[in-house]
Image (cartoon, rainbow, N blue to C red; front, side, top):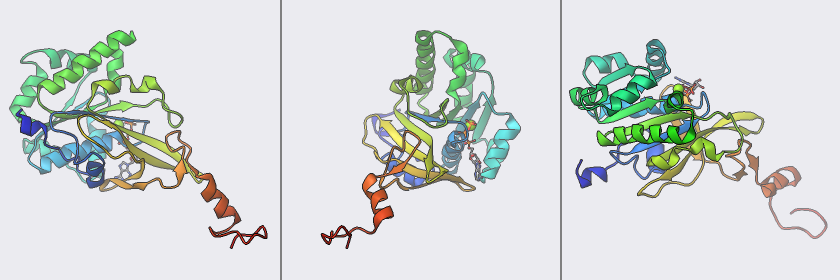
Length: 269
Ligand SMILES: Nc1ncnc2c1ncn2[C@@H]1O[C@H](COP(=O)(O)OP(=O)(O)OP(=O)(O)O)[C@@H](O)[C@H]1O
Ligand SMILES: [Mg+2]
């Protein structure tokens, strides 16, 4: 990949997320999407791959967890016909074990090499890297495995989205969950948030190498046309802890009256 290509952006397929990432992930970079079950990691990844196909960029999906039918059905519910994309030579889906893929990704002329070459793949979705934990128990060894794996993706010049499960549904983020964050170029966090007694979802770009990014935490939903990213959580705090509270002053005003000058008689004007 040339220097100028490496400065280009690969649109995620979602205009708001692209905006949060200053135009989208850099080409040839690896972005990690971390979230609890059901937050929308696979949906985000599918959108990224399907949008690439729309732009004429062939994609690869490597999945260790979904049965083919489930993945095809999830994609269809978002309006994507993966089988049609495969038929048109724009997509390959690989259902395999982490053991086989890890070995093949390092082998010259192996499965990853072959698929990338045959398809001319530009994008890849790995869903999810959490399954690599089966390959090593020791944390140091596991980090080596992740390092080797991410390097294999980078070597092929692919723009990658790699999902990772967050074991906590809500609650404070712990450093352990972000153990491989330092290996990747960008980190996107999807979280459940309790908001006024119901559950919403929040999205945040935690880091993006070699570029600026939006620091706000935004509400998002999964709809039948994919991710819908909304406005930042205004006047809220504690969003990343999973429990979003209104700022005290706003909560106070909501209960005790509208904002205004004190009349000096203990009332608010
Ligand atoms: N077409 C759709 N319309 C509305 N909501 C949808 C649609 N497709 C999926 N969802 C919602 O998106 C969520 C699942 O998203 P997704 O499968 O991407 O999550 P995930 O983070 O990959 O979960 P897991 O960790 O279990 O793989 C569910 O809450 C589901 O209800
Ligand atoms: Mg998933």
